[in-house]
Image (cartoon, rainbow, N blue to C red; front, side, top):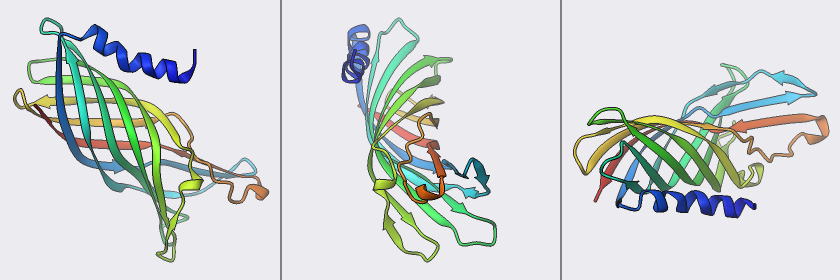
Length: 206
């Protein structure tokens, strides 16, 4: 079965199982990213200091559920940013890496109480752009340094204020090294880059 077929099944499965009710909403919020950034020269790690890079997310969601079940399925389409700030040491200028993606989270939501739900699932990401601000403060288009696709796991919780308004907290754990940089390849240098982002979101359901 092709990847396209698997993604189609993942998208249509909740519609078939939870077709009794569908609630549409919008969401947005703050991202605090501390992406995993590592470099190795001939297999030896090069020491790096990484710091948090703030960004945001915004998009739409579709929640599928049945009245008599505590498990809900949620699919989202988000424009989201992540990144990290990198230094060779505490005394050197930082290099800021910012990556923007279209992400499609697929979530299962378990109602722990009337107001709280635990959420877990996965996400698929598609690269839109990437910018690196070098140590001289220059902004450089670094889209070619990254692969187009990203994939990872999600875990978090949602607090429902009422039937329309909710807040959520979520952690994104990227599984793929979506680095594509060939810089210093002739020196046998390897670069690893993986998504590590905390999302603070506000949700409004119609």
